[in-house]
Length: 215
Image 1 (cartoon, rainbow, N blue to C red):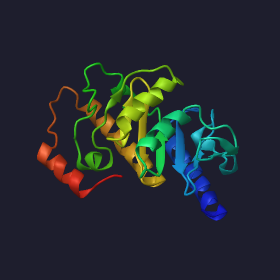
Image 2 (cartoon, helix red, strand yellow):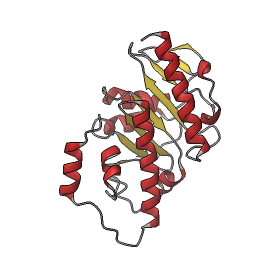
Image 3 (tube, rainbow, N blue to C red):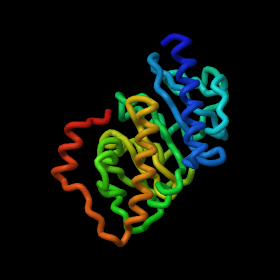
């Protein structure tokens, strides 16, 4: 990958991070973004960085073993990203947010831990699919990475209990779009609770999964 291409990805991380922040999908210094590079390394947003005010030049550059090569120290949740990438070799980017409606769903006691949100819309199935719940872990606990690793091979997105979603995509745009779709569907799910909504049938879901594979 050329320096020009890497600089373009840095700019894209900053632009999309600002977009997520300005629309209230992340707040303060919460949330983090990463992109896989052609040489096997990664770009990651730094620890304690606000996604709305990222400096492209200070975004962390890691080698294939996760060692910092340049920029600020990476997010302290980098192990979540590494766990997802290990199990999803075709994924090119990961977004992790503490978005309000998704976190709210993750706190509900009666949700299905194998599939937290039912298939309410076609675009949710196309961009997210089944969303398993990862049991609560203390932030920064390496065991959380192991729990994510156990699910990531079969799922492009997982929901961390009382924490938030981790979403992978072929590209950074795809990961962001899937994260936005997840947040909007979480909001729909909360609005429809107790209303016995009409969901897509298993046949409709299977057709969408076959026609619109994610990564």
